Image (cartoon, rainbow, N blue to C red; front, side, top):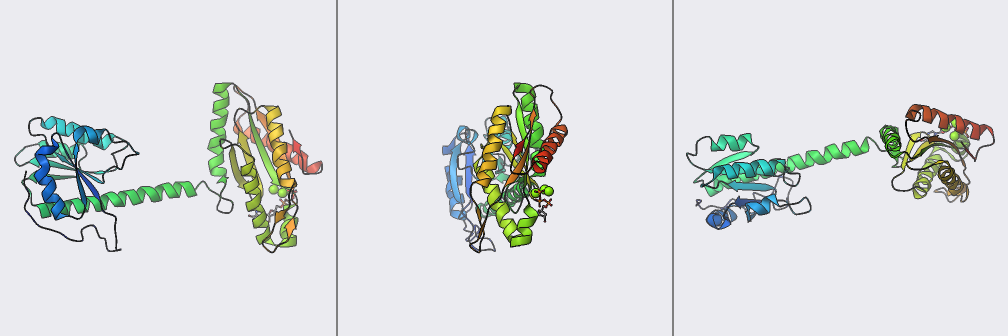
Length: 323
Ligand code: GH3
Ligand code: MG
Ligand code: MG
Ligand code: MG
């Protein structure tokens, strides 16, 4: 196939200034047969145009640099092969976010419509003007990038909705389903799990004495020490102003008690530095409950039980662990 000549400078530049060069892959059963398309298109745009065999396109993994746009050229001898390719590229995790443009010979009947139905974003009939094709590609690239930005902002929104802005720890909204998963794991694995509720001792006095900002500084540092004393797989969340929950799968009572003591000690052992150079000693109290393997109590019942244990730690002098 052959394209008319022409150049459209600046296609890759958006209103906001520099935009990274897009990668457009021309995919064909026989890459040699589309070399002139490749050449003409390379002249017509500032995008990077490559030639790719069908097998190479299908073999792309998420780790590879996946093209922004696939220009799938119909295999005239076996058009159904092109349709299969479009459908595969559209459904595979590595390539499903790329834009897809089907290139079909003029007068190929329903082929183009089927290509669109299988997930192609656009359709070009050959012979085509290189400038027109270049314009269509730049519009596909723009839409593809809008999609990428939207996916990122949705992912950011989801991430932020489960994070506590002060400490960066997870919040209750994240912790609750996590606790249910840990309970389900215990039911299947037959191994106990631990749930603990931690509450800072006399935190109101810290605020009253040093100010609310100092209280916040202490909360941030406590969060760091808690994180440093847990395994990556443990759940740690700030579930109230100065209250945290920790949940550990595969943790029977002796290990859970040791973990709770380690945490309690990590807070007690070193004072917390305030921004004005002063420092304060802080302690916390822990209520521990063990979720038995098998059916065991519900997550809510377990949390109530940890809360009762916490109350006992408080009433018996604070800075201690109660089961
Ligand atoms: P106890 O040992 O019985 O737990 O005493 P406490 O003073 O820690 O408990 P209380 O529940 O009476 O007070 C908790 C205080 O925590 C009151 C509240 O102002 C403070 N607080 C809650 N959230 C925050 C926060 O985000 N930042 C700061 N600086 N203080 C907070
Ligand atoms: Mg409290
Ligand atoms: Mg309290
Ligand atoms: Mg408290």
